[in-house]
Length: 227
Image (cartoon, rainbow, N blue to C red; front, side, top):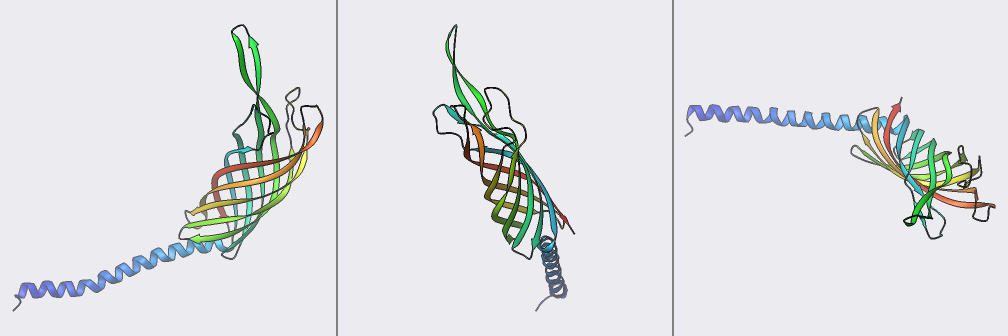
């Protein structure tokens, strides 16, 4: 036989268990509702995003050249269409160039000096893009294609000029990215892009020729949802 005190404890436990289960269900439902609110916010709204980072580009195949990390930045306006699609426009600022090894003979012997060569500093591409999105919890993964137009703005004068002043080109490529939802309006994002352009550049024979260039900026930033 149970003592009266044990019966009271058992009765209390039996009464408390439904309350605990109900509280757990409410907590789970609240978390699920918050997640659905965040996900729903980024399904059909428009968002504006900014990013900064670094990039590099292809260089001539001659010996003595080396890659340089260059600055990159972007501003984009996107429209989310349903759960999986996104279209928009992106304005970017990218520096493109490389370094060439030059030898200089001085009093103490030969020294190798890397001289900067410029494709565009900066070059400004404007691209239309389309992405396919996949959501997993608070995360959004996306990949897509882009096409647009590029124009170089500032180039060095003198022997170091590599790109014709105010050169322009069609731009095409793709991108992959990741967003993490912080709320109904904010997210942080990272994007890696690959772009192709064809600029008129000055070659070693002092003749301007069309030069195919691939550049690949990587940026991190934030997005704000515009309702």
